[in-house]
Picture 1 (cartoon, rainbow, N blue to C red):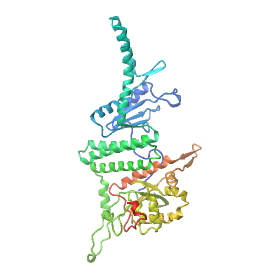
Picture 2: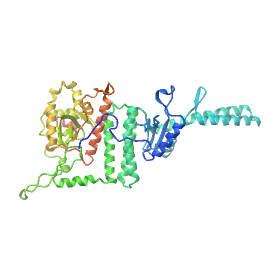
Picture 3: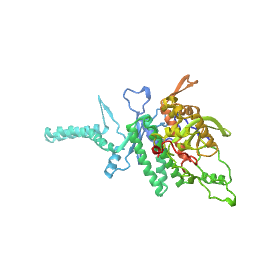
Picture 4: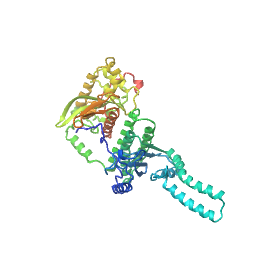
Length: 478
C-alpha cells in the first residue's frame, strides 16, 4: 500500500456545510439566491461583502460563503471556536455571539441594522402620538433619539464582551488548517453521541482544547512561523480520532492482520501500525522468553533511548516492494540514527543536529538540515548524509527498525527535497503557464505525512531498533 500525498487541496478530510443536514444548506442557499445576496465576484459593486450562512456547533460556529455557481464552498469563510472552560454566564454570551449574522440595509448614505430601521419608524410614530397627547418635547425628543442608538450600538458592545471568550480565524491558510481539525473534532463529537464510554467523552474534551488552542495560535501567528506546532497538534487530533473510532467500532482489519502474522506472512512496507515482533523460536534446549516490540522500547544495553518523538524524513531512490507500489520517501524515529548498523559517528552527529532545539513530534526533512547547515556547506563537518540515509533505508527493508514508507507524488517529493523557503515551479502545458509551489504547500505535505504517521502510531510509537548507541550530547536530548 502506497501513501499518496498532494501538496494542493484535497489532501485531508474536509468539513462540508451541514454534513448531517444537507437539506438545511439547500434551503439557506436558495433563500440567499432568491434574496439577491450572492456575490458574483468581479461583477459586484465596490465594498460588496459575500453573503454568509452560519452553521452553529457545540464548540463554535462556521461561516460559509455562497458560491454563485451553486456549488459547495471548498473552505469556510470564517471559523470561531468557543473557550472550553466557559462559565454559565459566558456560555450565554457565546450563544448570543453565535446568532445568525445581522444583515444591514442602506438608507441613503448610511447602512443600519433592520432592527434599527424598524425601531426608528416605531419611535417616530410613538413620539408623534406622545406629543399629540401633551407630553413635553424635552422628554419625547431625547427618548426618540436614544432608542435607535441603543438598538444600533448595544449589540456591538455585547459582541465585544462575548468575543473575549472565542477565537475567530478568517485568513485563508489558517481556515484551511482549522477546517481539518474541525472535521476531526466533529467526528469525535458524533462518536460521543453513540457511546457512553469515559474515554470517548474525554477525547471530545481534549479535542475541544486542541481546537481552541489551535485557533488562538492562528490568531497570533501565521502558518509559516507556527508550522511545527500546527503539525504536532494535527497529529494529536488524528490520534484521538483513530483511537476513538477503534473504541466505538473496532476495526475488522486488525483481526485479519493478526491472523496473517500468525500464518507467518510478511506485510508489505507501508504506513501500517507497528505489529508485535517475535524472535524466531529457539530449540527446546535453549528456550528463552519471547521478546515483543513493546519490550524493545525498554533500555537494553545502553542508556535510555532519547527523543523518539522527533522524526527524520528523507527521500531516496524509488523501489517497488509490490506491483504498482512505489516507495520513494521514508520516515524514521530520530533515535534510529544511533543504530549500530548505521554509519557512525556520522549517524550520532546527524542525530545531534536533528534533535537540537526541536519540539516533540516534529517531522524534520533532511533538506531542512541541509538548509540549516549553510545550504549543505557544513555537511562535511557533520557526516556523510548519503551513507547514513542509505543505511537507514536498509534497516527499514531488513525490519531492524520501524519506518513509515511513502510514495509521494512528484511535486510533493520535490517540496520535501527543497528547503523551507524554496519554491518549486512546474510548467502546465494545458494552461501554458508555470505553477509555483512554495513554503505553504511544503507545510501541507508535512502535515499529510504527520497524519499518516499518526495512523501508523495508533498502536505504539515507531520502534528505532535495538542496541542504540549513546547520543553525542545525551544531556541535551533527554
